[in-house]
Image (tube, rainbow, N blue to C red; front, side):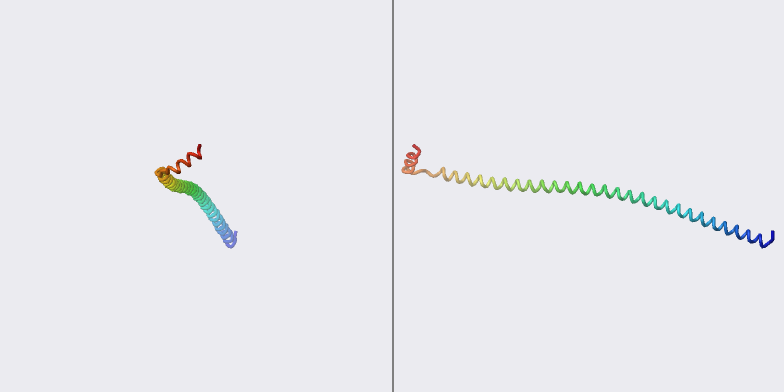
Amino acid sequence: MSNASAKANAHRHAHADDFLSQINALKQAEANAQSIIEEAKKKAAQIEAEAREKAVQIAAKASEKSVEAKNEALAKARQETDEQVGKIIGEAKRQAEKIRSKSLSQKDAELLAQKIL
């Protein structure tokens, strides 16, 4: 084998080694990228699950607050109604006392008795 031929073979061999080295580096980069993608997907799924859980908690708390607000409004309305009823009953009692305290004149009593009998 001539010197030129040996140099050509050595050059081809070096070129093939570089090519294989580049292919191996590319495969390693793809594997690393795939690993990073998988890790990102896992993290995204975890974040999504946490967000759903948080949304459920927020909805439950909002529902609870809504029930509390409704109950407070009902209690306030019930209290106001009770106060109004108490005022009306008090006024009715005062009116009844007024009517009871009035006496009928003898003439009015006789007229009433005649109408009843």
